[in-house]
Amino acid sequence: MNEENTQAQSEQPTVGQILKKHREQANVSIATIAAPLKLSELQVQRLENDEFALLGPITFVKGYIKNYCRELKVDSSDILAMMPAPPEPTKPENMQSFSRRTEKEANDSRLMLFSYLILAIVIGSSALWFWQNATPIEEQTSNINVENSRMSERQAAQPSILEQQQAEIDDESLLESQSTLTPTETTNTEAVTQTIPLTSNNLNQDDSASTIVMNFNDESWVEIYDAKGDKVAFGVKKAGYVMTVSGTPPFSVVLGKHDVVSITLNGKPVDISAFPKNRLAKFKLPLAE
Image 1 (tube, rainbow, N blue to C red):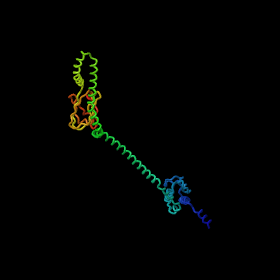
Image 2 (cartoon, rainbow, N blue to C red):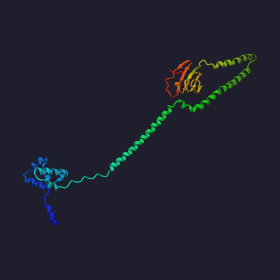
Image 3 (cartoon, rainbow, N blue to C red):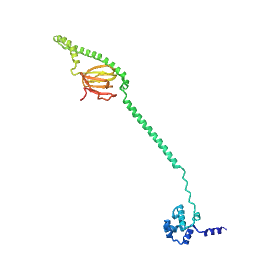
Image 4 (cartoon, helix red, strand yellow):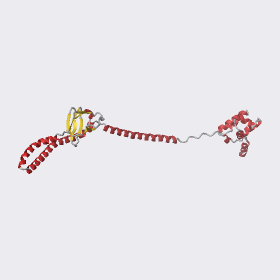
């Protein structure tokens, strides 16, 4: 029974054989039918030899068969039914690529957030540094007010100590000179002794000394050294204060808020408006040309 079925199936004509049989019955050559189908004679031969794999996808082959039968005016439904069904499209693999892309985007987002955080820290640090450097001078000098007062007290005590030392030196010098002088010279020593105070007073008056007058329109910190390195002014001055100091020029001046201070040197006004505001102004008096 099985052998008969196998033999029957083997005797059943194929699609290509059926097409070739219909073409020969219609007395149509291969070249004649190839022209309207827009196929080469080789392709028509492959179609009749059931070499469908050489003609492309099964869908294209069915189209060739349908056009072939239309040219021969043959029903193509039975012949197309003998063709194998087109293969089902393969199912897409698991969405691993999408998951990986999503994970990559999440990692990129975290990296971008971390970069923004670092950038914010850098900007904040820069802003804090700029704010500290642009802080008004009153805040910058608040920590040294106590030291300023101590320095002022020491400076106030120094003149009396120096005067005592100078008096002791003068007395010793006078005694030594009197011990070495002859009786005739002793009389002259009294006259010299009388002129010593006058000479010392004259020494304190320096023809090259200059006078600085500062008018403070608001509270400001000031520090002044003369050419000898002596500190002639130091501390915070209140609004409305007028300060007058003298010394040997040139003077080294540091002002906290120079825009609230007007200065005259030996009666001549000094222009310090060119210095930047909210910063310590350091300059020499007289100003360099």
